[in-house]
Every structure is written in C-alpha cells, then in structure tokens.
Amino acid sequence: MAKRPRTRPTAQASHEEGYLSGQILVAMPNMQDPRFAGTVICLCAHSPEGAMGIILNKPIEGMSFDELLKQLELEPVPPQRRIALCQGGPVEGGRGFVLHTKDWTSDASLPVAEDLALTASVDILKAIAGGGGPRSGILALGYAGWGPGQLEDEIQANSWLSVDPDEALLFGEGHDGKWRQAMAKLRVDPLLLSGAAGHA
Figure 1 (cartoon, one colour):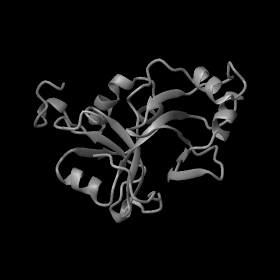
Figure 2: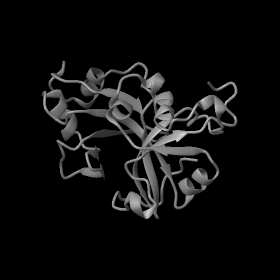
Figure 3: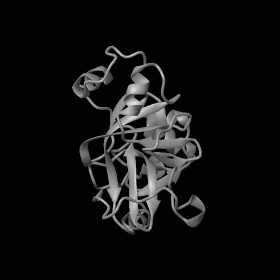
Figure 4: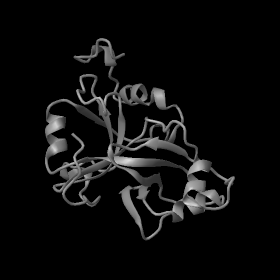
C-alpha cells in the first residue's frame, strides 16, 4: 500500500466522474497496514494515474512549527502565526506540504476542492510566519500515494470509507478524536463494523 504513483496525479478528475479528490478517506477497523490503521486522510488528487493524500491525524512528535522555521532558515522566529504539523504519509517523508483553505494560493498551489488547496513551496510558510497566509492550514511531512487502480481496489476490499470534508476534520487540533469524528459523520458505530473488536 501507499506506493508512489508513477506520475503525479492531477486534481482535475472530478468527484462526479467517480474520483474522490477533496474527499476524506477513513480507514476501516480491519485495515491491515499498520501505517494506515486508524487514519483519516484528505485525498488531494485522484485520477486514472493514481492518487495522493495527506494523513490528518498523526501529529509529529518532537518538532514544533518554530523549530521547522529555524531548520529552513525562515523568518520571523518566533512566528506571528503557527499551524499544526502532522506526518502526512510514508512517501517522501522529508518533503513538506501545506493543506490549506483557498483564500491564499500561489502558482505552486494544487487545487484540491472548492475551498481547499495543497502547496509545497516555502512561500506559504513565510506568509504564515509573517502573520498572513491562508485562514486555516496544516503542514504535513510526506504523503500517502497509490498507483493506478490501487486505491479503487482497496475501497472495493472495504479498507476505506469516504466522507465529505469539514474544517474540524481537516484542521482541528483533536488528532486522537478525528477517526471517531469521521465515523460519526457517516453515522456509523465503529463497534458494529466487522473486525472492530479490540480497535475501539
């Protein structure tokens, strides 16, 4: 699971065409891959070429936004604004991506949904540190990736459910509760799902 797509998928394939760009993926309790057990993922791109997403509920331990700015030699430190950091996935773990509201974009931003974009340039970190930037955002190191048809196969195998995004799931601070929040949006009791025993 989470192999790097052969080519970077675009966000242009729409939800109506059967692709899930902009949707939230919720790992089923029977998820076998420990890297994805209990995860909530924003699917940033999904097309015939594959898919990529950002895990929203795995905080990075031992690093703060301030420390990241120092490592990148970005000013000002301390910043006027901060955003949360998370482990975005097992692919390219040293690369940073900011998932954010679309009230701030640059030429390097990838549209994800109507009010959501993904930016991988340091310009957005400079803007946030300086007190500007998007209204809401989360900084992810790494991402989750699927090759052509791989995510569709996993969905068919009942590894994932999808749910519409909201700002609490995308940018809220309660990482531990996001999986249950997502399940609640689906009106699903995790205890009633097969394989849920011992994972509640």
